[in-house]
Length: 467
Ligand SMILES: Cc1cc2nc3c(=O)[nH]c(=O)nc-3n(C[C@H](O)[C@H](O)[C@H](O)COP(=O)(O)OP(=O)(O)OC[C@H]3O[C@@H](n4cnc5c(N)ncnc54)[C@H](O)[C@@H]3O)c2cc1C
Image 1: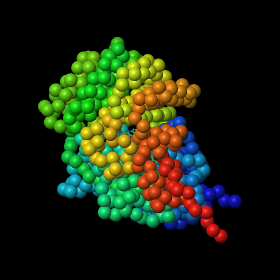
Image 2: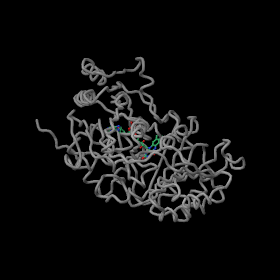
Image 3: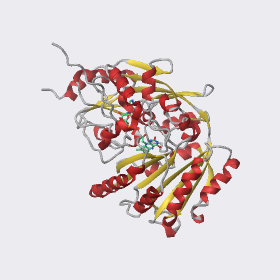
Image 4: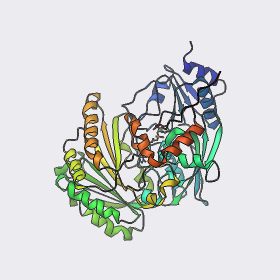
């Protein structure tokens, strides 16, 4: 019997405009790799789509054959959902067109764009689309799950800035969703991930911004507890223009780090001020006073520099594992657990990432979009990053152990974009009271769960077919 992937190949090869790659063919090895080196799979066929009609044909062929199908934009799914063994990968990486209407402050973003592609195009018009903090991340996966970054407090989540989606549903049909068309789908696509179809285009709002004040500094291990308590209180009252992220980690061995701190547990503080620099001075000074003076810097940088400054810290091909959750508040016990855990971090790149949301993201009513919790301002991501497979066990167990200790103080909820593959049981928790509506939309648009390599919302069971 023919492998399912060969059936799809035969069906597509005459009309496909992009490239179809099978194991052993030139380009296949490079195309099969995704960002997370922990997830190495061998698809039976990789369909590098040239345009939306390739996507339609690929989905239709795959649906008919019933082959396991992964959809890929930037390949940065932490869980590794954008690949599979023996199945089909619908890869959109050749679809990276961004069309900016500077007067209307709107853009149309193709489904294969990276954040960097979007930033480069929108900055030419002095405009920004609020997205994530690493420019090689895929825009589609990030937006569909929600999308948080430096501008979340000022302009909201990425998904809050989408006005329309064009997607290919499981039967190969092209469907539009906006505030005027298919309202349930429009609601579900803003936070519901890849559950409903392949998005080939996003229509988004843009905002004027070309530069920010960027400040950073390190707080030594002994000060981590008091810093986190200060941050929690300070950010609750901070203006929307201020974003302050903290990473608890081992300080890198670089020239910019004071010699006494290198390799030591620290809190690494990164602050962005998006408003008038003079108005931000006192807020930044208050925060930087919690850092070691010889580690502090503050400067005005371009938006493009901001968006690319962390790129090299998260290289492709390393091994990554993550667990995350929300806090309404950080109690003293959680602060102590985090501070203690830094001292036992198993890898120099592994870290506890803390971001304070709120602001514009919290001003959208919870029922307006499918996105997870907007009320808990603190989001924590435990991110392990290492390169040697022999360190898999120590990194995974460090993350899991710390998560278990912190879990009782967390607010139930999860951000789908920060979830690992072993957390499918937490998907209902991500949507909470929005779960039934998610299941209803999924059952309507993808009744056979064709799109299941994602933080999956299973459709209602199909009634048995009668002969
Ligand atoms: C280095 C790094 C930095 C990150 N920084 C941030 C950050 O600052 N803020 C934040 O919110 N998140 C961040 N994330 C998490 C990120 O949002 C998710 O990993 C996201 O899924 C990545 O999108 P992608 O398109 O690259 O992923 P992919 O692996 O290509 O896809 C991820 C999921 O989306 C689905 N999908 C992809 N494209 C489409 C499409 N066109 N239509 C339908 N479904 C699709 C896939 O099937 C899969 O389920 C980061 C991740 C990494 C690895």
